[in-house]
Picture (tube, rainbow, N blue to C red):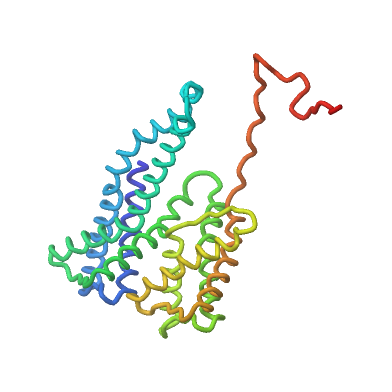
Length: 309
């Protein structure tokens, strides 16, 4: 039942996201009667959902034995005591870092590389079936695939809002996670000279800004470092904003940022808006109190200090 609800939500969300990509990417369009267009987008969305779901599966499955081995090595205290050199002592930590780097790489590929491939396969299938879809160019395919990936993730959110406890809280938190960055990017376009959106109707501009916001949120950066957190967040948001503006080159309308100062000011505005996203994350529960050692307990307690004489 859960799998059926998942597919009944993801496939229509992917189809709507493909329709939005056809509205904004000039090199991708679907012709014909409305019924034929709906069938084309549904087939494209179905293929996209299937490929995006199962193409990274072999890589994730191959990493599971490495994850279990890393966890087993980190729990093995006897091996740590038997280590004769520092190199042997830190070997489990190095292995865990290697597995973590592989996980990050697979996740990055699944986020950036797999969606264009899935979208291209879906489009080629509907073209082979004789449906009126047209897709020209490598970068338009990449941009359209990333749009489908980013927009589909937000369109499928209501399915999770309707299940489980605290529905309204999760719905409000998800809405804030989209609206706050959208407000930051919109404010940067309205206030900063050199940050402009190509002329279009206000509905088309608003749709473009919403899609660019979903692309901006496609890669999440969490930074927590004293004294340099704000600078690192501005740098990370600036990099993402530059990537979004570059991807919008193949969209109509597109976002243009001219010069370094407009770029830095826009990144600062977006960082200020996204700072409030920390308020949407639920507070982590406090750690449990440490259990006393049954064989060697401290009779004075953890806060007792012997006086120095």
